[in-house]
Amino acid sequence: FEATHNHALWHYDFHHGSLRVVDADGTWHTPKLLGFIDDRSRVVPHAQWYLAEDAERLVHGFCQAVLKRGLPRGVIRDNGSAMRAAEVVQGMKDLGIDDEPTLAHSPYQNGKQETFWAVVESRVLAMLERVERLDLATLNRCTLAWIEGEYHREVHSSLGVTPLDRLAQGPSVARDAPNLARLRFVFTQAITRTVRRSDGTVQIDAVRFEIPSRLRTLREVALRYRRWDLSEAWVVDPRTNDILARIEPVDLTRNADPQRKPLAEPAPTSVPVTPDEPLPSCMRELLANFAADGLPPAFLPLDDNPTRSP
Image (cartoon, rainbow, N blue to C red):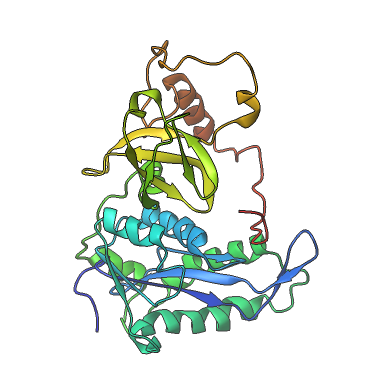
């Protein structure tokens, strides 16, 4: 089968690579490649190697694919635990994406994705066989360079044109990608919790969160959160899913201070910010000017570590 429009259907899956990578601790890992491929054009919106296969990595990769190429109409995937996670299912629903699983033990239904894995193994990993102490960052740089520099620009045997030409010829049903703040919110799990009357808190996965004073009269609150990131959660309207408040874990050390804060929330002393624009205008201007000079950010991200504590 083949979709009639570009971005009408994306295939995605995880692939266990044949090469191993070593981390900074000297531990060897078998990396997993998360890849997305458009059914009609065969363009790869995004591909990235990780050290684990879970919902957190899936959301991380899918958000990058959406920011690069826009929102697809639908996706097809297998029945892996990461694909069936509550955060992923809820995110696809909120973004209006048809999330269709393949039949059990039927990899041929995702055949375009399986063919892409074979090409990655025969081209990218074959070129890296003699690299000593291959690390995850190098593997990702090489894979993305091959996708953009060779795969997208060579004539595809089934299409007769390059994937980029096929994409440019259209037609396309891609939608504009939402901003990053929206993507972070939609890929969350929806739950309901009872507010504890004594201190106005709720418990999520053994972590206590403080509810704003204006919402403490509610007996139950609808919440959205990510299991792999309990640094924040959101109180939402259960009817519309509009964000009512962003909440954080209770600071027990601060609570030990006998000077208690008032229950009434103080009036804002500056221009309020929205979830979409959490930074003040001055800081946004500074960041925009820094990005315009073309210099890389003055920090390096840490390598992926699947053994870290949740």
